[in-house]
Structure formats: structure tokens, C-alpha cells
Length: 332
Ligand code: NAD
Ligand code: DAU
Image 1: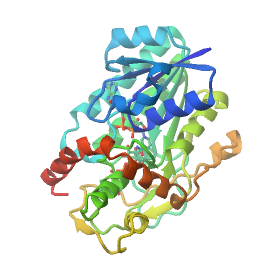
Image 2: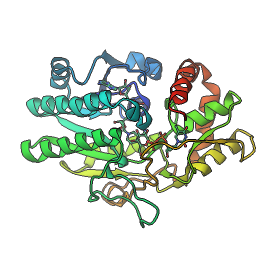
Image 3: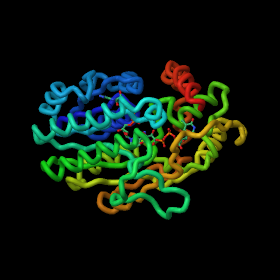
Image 4: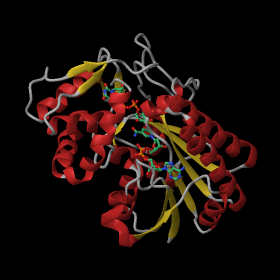
């Protein structure tokens, strides 16, 4: 058995990764380290609770992390503060968890000579703007716009430096926007779906012309497994479905799936510093590791995602009121 430590495994992508790994890769024995912040939820792991070891703790806790890394063969690092709007309200936990947390983990991995895969985002490359052709590549310049993406960029740079200077056996991946089950109600698609389910209109920031590349969470996690299996140490891989959609079109698709008129949304003030467009060129991942998205189009995975929220109101309802209260404070 290969002993795998998954940090942030009670969050959206991490929990889906745990589920998928248990279902498809029986050679892994999984332990999860998660601080259970507002975004971490043990209900995300309820169905597999008997199949994993869960440790409630902080990636910044050096002693705890050292012990867990020592007793693991491979570490997959999802733990982070992940929401841009929250980082605009209070960047402090982002600097701590995303930068300091990654540093603590890297030092433990270095001490015990373990394999690390670091999960990151395409947002580290900043804004592609309206006129840019194509997408980010692994060679794109780091140019983050928000406190969130600046802390993720910092973490990436630490990983790159530890790989090069200390020979840490690390890989990293930068994925585009994810969607799927267990995504917190604060994020764009779940916020709009849960609004409509409660009879409220979706809220579109600014013009709604901003573009994101929507990638199903299972496609993201399959790519992570390919990188763990065959990725080149010290390398970064971009992950993205190729499906670029404007926010307005996403809202219209959500409304269509839920049987409402396409114009049944309202616009709210824009996010400060709002990046216009992200897109990845994932040809390195496709060429070297044979990755292909099973959901190349948002519409392939949107209805099942919407259905998941429809059927699991018990899961999102407890956080919805607080999420909307936070947005009201931000005027969004
Ligand atoms: P999430 O907010 O849903 O989950 C984050 C998890 O990390 C939570 O369970 C939380 O409790 C845990 N956590 C936070 N701080 C911690 C700490 N100090 N110690 C231990 N655990 C801590 O986030 P997500 O959307 O699942 O994102 C997971 C990772 O993927 C992040 O690194 C994020 O930057 C990256 N990413 C996300 C997306 C996306 O679209 N959501 C896209 C690309 C990359
Ligand atoms: O690109 C990858 C990144 O995608 C990840 O690194 C982040 O962790 C993840 O949160 C996501 O960041 P975004 O800022 O792109 O995602 P968010 O869901 O917050 O918003 C998506 C788009 O929708 C963005 O252009 C802002 C807009 N939006 C968002 C909300 C919550 C709205 O128009 N209305 C909303 O209510």
C-alpha cells in the first residue's frame, strides 16, 4: 500500500479527490489533514469515513505536519483559503494558510524525502485581458491580481525553489475553474444554483462578460493522478477543459437547467480588480500524460451538478444564510 496524505481533503476538490482515489485506486491508504475552516466539512467525507484516517489540524502546525509526512509516502496538498472575494475582505488567513502552510509542508517533505504534488490555480498568471490569443502556458509569467492569487503564486514559487535547490520530489499543477458536487455555496455556480432553488435571482458581477474555463472536478482529479503516476519531477502542468464561457452564459445555462427564463438574473457591483479572462493551454498534460477531459463542455456536467444541489439541500442550506450575509456586506 502507498500511504497518501491529502491536505484540505474535507474541502470541495480535496474531498472529491479522496472519493475518486478510494473508488479507482485501491493501492492508496489515505489520511486527510484538514483544519475544518468554514470551507471544510466532514459531511463531504461522511460516505468514506470508515475508509480513511481523518486528522483535524492545521498545515501550519509544524509538529503535526512533520509526524504525518513522516508516516506517508506521498503528499497531495489541496489545503488553502480558496475564495477571491474573501481575500479582498481579509487577506490574513490567505497569507498564513497558503504561504506559511506550504512552507511548513515543504520543510517536512524535505526532511523526510517524500513525494509532493502541490495543487494550484491558473489565477497565478493574472488576467489574459480581452485581446490575448490562446491561453496561459507553463512558461507564462506569474502576475497575480488578488490577495488569493498572490498567495497561491507565492506558494508555487516556494515549491519550485524547494524542488530546484533542495531536490524535493515535487510536481505542481495549475487548474482552471472547477465545478461539481460539494462546492461551497460561496462560489459562482453553487451560489447561483442555490439562489434559484430558493426563488432568488442569480447575481452577476459587473458586465458578466468575464470569461472562465470550466473544468469538472473529476477531470481535475484524474489529471492529478496522472501527474502522480507519470509526471516529471520539478515540472508544472496546466489543467483545463478548454471550455471558455462568459459568466453571463453560465448564468443563462443554470437558469435553463432550472427551467427559468434566461434573463431572470440581476447585476450587482463588480469585484474590485476582477480579472477579465482566464484560459489554459493544457497541451503539455495532454501530450505527455494523455489526459483528456471527460467533460469537455460545461453543459456535459452542469445538469448533474445542478441536480446534486437540488437533491442535497441539507448539505448547502446551513451555510447559505451566512454566505449571503457576507455578500450583502460587500454590496454583491
Ligand atoms: P475549499 O475552500 O473548498 O477547500 C479548502 C480546504 O482546505 C477546506 O477543507 C479547509 O478546511 C482546508 N484548509 C484551509 N486552510 C487550512 C489550513 N491552514 N490547514 C488545514 N486545512 C486547511 O477549496 P477548493 O476549491 O477545494 O480548492 C482546493 C485547492 O485547489 C486550493 O489549493 C485551491 O487554490 C485550488 N484550486 C481551486 C480551484 C477551484 O476552482 N475551486 C481551481 C484551481 C485550483
Ligand atoms: O481559476 C481558478 C480559480 O477559480 C480558483 O483558483 C479559485 O479557488 C476559485 O474560487 C475560482 O476563482 P474565481 O474568482 O474565478 O471563482 P468565483 O466562483 O468566485 O467566480 C467565478 C466568476 O464569477 C468570476 O468572474 C466572478 C463571477 N461571480 C462570482 C460570484 C460569486 C459573479 O458574477 N457572481 C457571483 O455571485
